[in-house]
Image 1 (cartoon, rainbow over the protein chains, first blue to last red):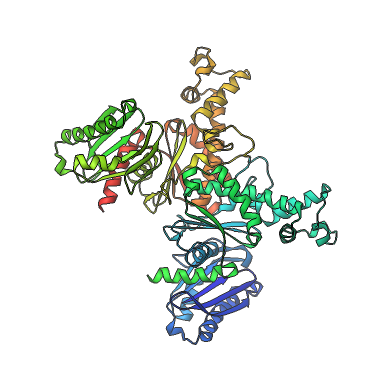
Image 2: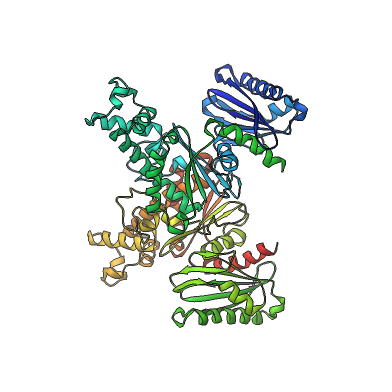
Length: 318
Length: 318
């Protein structure tokens, strides 16, 4: 089986055996500016190379799973819209399977990262799992009854656009609304809150980390300072954790999962983030739902996408 | 098949044929103050009477579905906690099946009302449906892939305890938190908003409807005035619809359903409530999710519970 994680900057590809253990890996730049055909050719070459590196032939391949950003249709294999790639209605599944001669299964990248974590990562053994990725945005994947739940038009899991504060207030979200979790707790919101604290004269090592140029404060800088014990940075992470905790408590009350897995760049903060998240959830989620759930950090890191893509092929075969 | 809807004030029971068409009905007062055994006896008598009225014998009954409030375990048939009945850990399923000699299936009442609407009510033909009941509280049932999704400890669908405004503000909810949808948009919240408007000197027929005793203003009074065109009452309903719309948009972004069915006493307002709800949802839900969904009023009214209980038996048989 081959898994492909198609991102805006790179295409990550891996060949795996039937236990979903990765045997070979290929990483290539996506270069979307070269056009759809060039990107599709890059993906196809990556698949062939991963298979060759694994000492196998395309005849040995049971299927290829592909994770792509943006709304897409897993049934037709069409990427409906991928802003990072400037793609509209690209029949990626058909383009790949025609050339490769094997079945190609397309799925949303966040859903696949969730599936990977549910099967082989932090959610191993889970039945109902919510995967939340916190980085530049906040996305999600719902694994219900052990399989991806993708909804009625394949766009379920848009956790970042859950309103959790007064919709007339709060910072503006990329979706055009106010009050969304993404606008309050994703990387850019964390950086913004840190800059505000600094401008209010808060003493913090973050100022030194950016050599005094406050505009250079990112969520990574906040994270580095928080992990080093900087009080201001920890307070900012705590505020983001408060919002995340409210959003996660909402999800727990609605979906009563056994596991919530938090991934994405911001999740690298680990317990500095997770501890206050759990505290807020404990205070807000209903008791029988809270008692049934564990909230953990993702384990697969940047591999989640390809691992999930391989698991998708396994699911389709069984 | 027999369906039972066990409520705090009455036990509604119906016998149905294999097309889930109701043939006979029996309604009895619950009288929980008489104790668990008396209530269980009332339920058992109701089932026998409904079967007899349908011209059948217990031998003809394929199964009995029972909807009960509160956390319960459908796998063991135990009602874990039902505050209205003052029940703790009552093995209702076993108590009934021992006496009746037929399989008894227990399920949460909101889930069953949702299942009824999904199969034979406003959600006919739906695959992924969210049922929201708005009355004294706000509850819900998730019908995903055509079946009840009950979560990892059978308490999924607690839609009323989704925080949608700043959790440090907003009215206090029965769950002990602030910011919950239930505290903002359920019947008591509607009545409270109306009383506040009246105290602020707003001209409204609601004052006459309660003969000047403002404490008597309930959500039913607000509804009557709103349906009669009273501007103040319509404004109150609009405010509740704003909150409901935000909560429903959140659910649509998360679950991407094809149908949202709104039931419960407050839903009897019909389009006076649904029109502003749809407007808010249109502004907040992500486009591909909004385009996939219709938001409609429940059709089965007080029958939803027993119809859902019958549908549960059908699901278990198939």
